[in-house]
Length: 461
Ligand code: CO
Image (cartoon, helix red, strand yellow):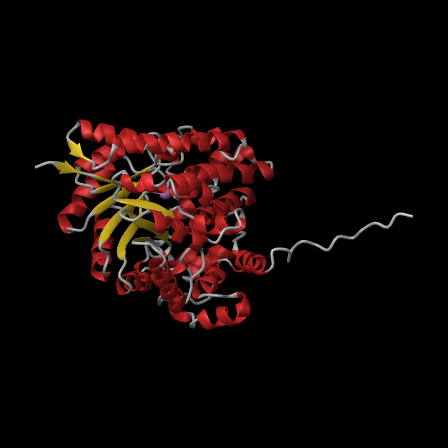
């Protein structure tokens, strides 16, 4: 029996998000879509929070329009998106009716597979999304946010995956957004998951720490069904490993990838000058292509390391950098071991920084940390100790239910606020997710000159 492994191509989402701050325009994607469709990928990742945001913020593009344009050209390959559970594409909780409407429209406009995750791995924050994806006929891929800590053991993830499957997940993703998944840990985790579930397993990592190809090899040996890669001009560094290289290596040891190397070459040839353009205009900083093993040493994502360093420079406290890095795991343990992903990574980093700078722990506490301890983001992976909880929120009550249970339906409110600027439910959803950006975009669509100030002409005598 031939061994098989499938590929998801990230060039249209994660690869350009990781390397060029999501600046690739629809116009730059269109000419190569047919070839991408013919190359033999399992799916193309095309949408997520940053692509939606950047389309409106920097490109004056309607993100829904991009999705429809891609769908028009890509007729055979699945289109995939990334969704933050109850937060949809942002960082706040939305009412269930908004989550449901967004998922319905994402699928109706061309998405096949929705990869859904929660930054705290709180399953309650995935419930509505998973149910809606199933209701509207999409493929539901539930992702575990991969992190390491004394509580994030193989059995922790095994239990999580069992719950995801019960809720309706149709495939599982191990989402290693920080590039800290090592080859041996990947092997052990996937073997354990394969013992308890028949669902396909997809692995997502970043090349940041220099071990990603080995991690994929061990993942595939353990039975992973799909891996996420980026076409070579936009591969490596903080992006994914190269599609062509992984494919050639895996074919060489007997795996069938279904990929057509000639088409991959064509795709790489197409994107090479685009990469050069972004190098020349300095949107692509060569630093993000470097290897950063510190992320493995400190178990802290690369982005968080650089954020902390710039925060410390601003406070003229660079000499305390090592001390803050040692404080990070302590704060994280106090807070019940949240995964270090946005927004938790910034919150934990800021608290560690304040603890060290003030010479006293929890003398100053950001509002976000208080909200988190109250339970507004969801449940921490393990309960927070009574003493710490008291130190942070005193006698204030904590939430025990699902955070979104407290939010009343919101679609009507958004629809009313937007008034006649909205021509469709898609417009209303755009506004629900990014209010200011959507309003500006929709006003410009109605009147291209609306934000151009009336010229004051100097009268010369
Ligand atoms: Co990623």
